[in-house]
Image 1 (cartoon, rainbow, N blue to C red):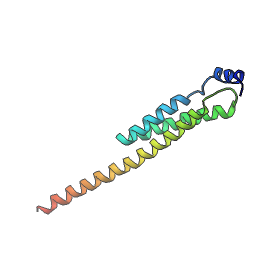
Image 2 (image 1 turned 60 degrees about the vertical axis):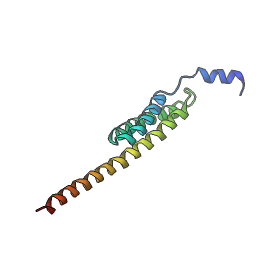
Image 3 (image 1 turned 120 degrees about the vertical axis):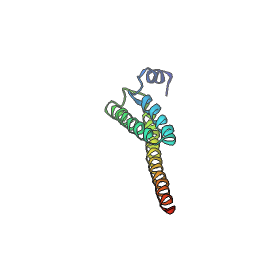
Image 4 (image 1 turned 90 degrees about the vertical axis):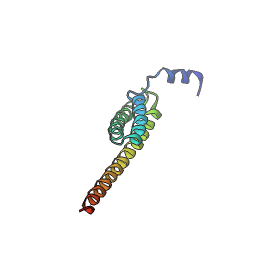
Length: 110
């Protein structure tokens, strides 16, 4: 690739919503570990933004740069979404177990 081709590529705008999808994807991964449900919400938003960026890249392949950012945002959003779902289910099962134990313990004193 010559210097002229590289300078032309640098002048192209970055895919719309590709950077935002990457940032939201990383945040969904963090929120998925911390709380669960915010990770699910941010993961869904990140996936939507990454899909919109990938559609724009597919529609106009030579008009934008930064396709890898959209792919990375999609991957991070999926990871955060899965983590949020798994941990939310784990929290619910844990609290059901604790509640069942508390109810069973209260009946044992009668």
